[in-house]
Image (cartoon, rainbow, N blue to C red; front, side):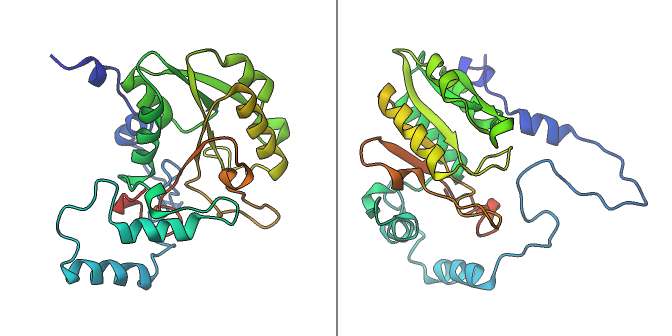
Length: 247
């Protein structure tokens, strides 16, 4: 018999995409809007420097053995240099490499929550958050995003959801699926709320720095020295390599 965890685990995105059978219109080009894979239409190509670096690493033979459980030190140092900021510097030992950003999200949630605990999640939001929580027996409590305010968090609604078993606030900035980018002022308001509730923040920043003109991305960790922040990201979107599964 299958385990309880497996029976309560499902991914709504895969359920839709894997069963999708749409007959194309012969007179129109099909544009897939189903999953966030920037390589599907072949109009965005991984730059040669990225693939060349991978080939050199593979051919060197230096990376064929077991690495440290958190990833090779050189790779973690590169991540720390790339994503650390003046106000939130990172050391290699602050970085854990995972199987994609999805794997990093799972590590963050499981690292903070026991079965029966709850976490505050955005609505609308990325469906994988619910998939992971359901699998691990973590209760999902969904706070509203306000479409009339560029999909900012309804912080009063968020506060009303928290109790003694709430272990974290998860935010997604820039947002999937809303496409919004939180202002610096709104991020500070989120931090003020988290500090008042004495809760850490899991910040899904897989789309970090990928903004249109007129919008600026701020890593939320760079705006606080008092609220614990677990920032998660990956190379899938920025470097156009989602199949490489590095987060």
